[in-house]
Image 1 (cartoon, helix red, strand yellow):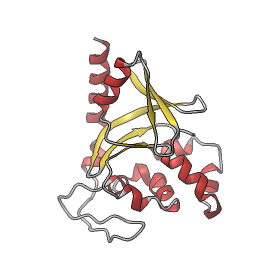
Image 2: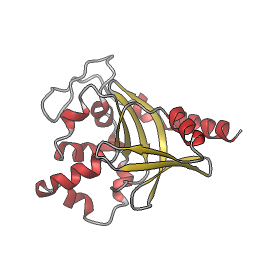
Image 3: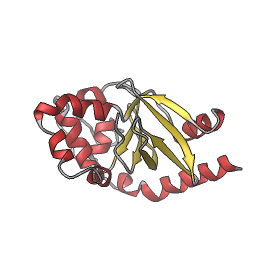
Image 4: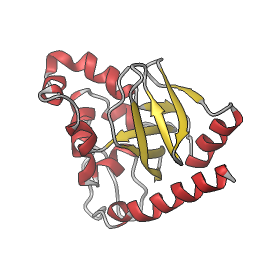
Length: 190
């Protein structure tokens, strides 16, 4: 019964929160280079293309470009990205984002961003099942080699980082041609 409530909550969140993605303008082709993605009308864009088409991820897209990770996240994958929204980045201490975006901090920025990426495609139902099958916790290894721990609290799926901070998954199963995006309300830190 608990699993059903979580899945229903995740489903409702998906329905209510996917409107910006459904109405994003994907009709303009974007030229492809190291920091951009090429799409044509009707194609499902890559993770970077999906994020770039939604203004709620503009900080994430800028960070991915600054860390030179566009080419990686445009590759075949599949990847699961726990994508912090602009509001999530805004919750960081003042000046943190600006400092991370400086070229001399590219290594640190890359480590933070790859902590939000998992190799493979984990749909919301897979995460909930794994949490329930593993006594309420599901550890997942990120691309940077560190782990995130998924758990359920008050009917919501949460991610706990290595500093014991938690982020809530606020949008699930946003499809991309090379994986899936789940939006989160906090930036997790390795």
